[in-house]
Image (cartoon, rainbow, N blue to C red; front, side, top):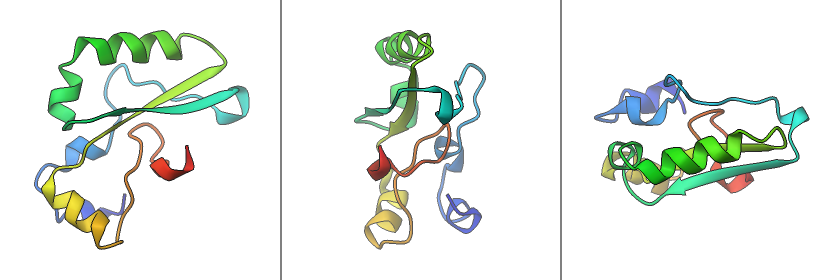
Length: 99
């Protein structure tokens, strides 16, 4: 996500990733690259135990790389609808449409 976009939204930390415990793998070494799309805001999703369990389980396998993406809040949603940004994964900023 562009820095100029992050400056325009209220809680940019929702969209930048890099949290302790997040997993990043070399795409050359995985067979399955997927996104776990949680249908609510980052704060709600990160408090969901099921998300943590599935994320850890999937990424514990060498062949799988599961990234996370959460529903955008209204400010980023408007920017996405204008076509200025795309919804991206937290781990590698991969546009969701590419997965």
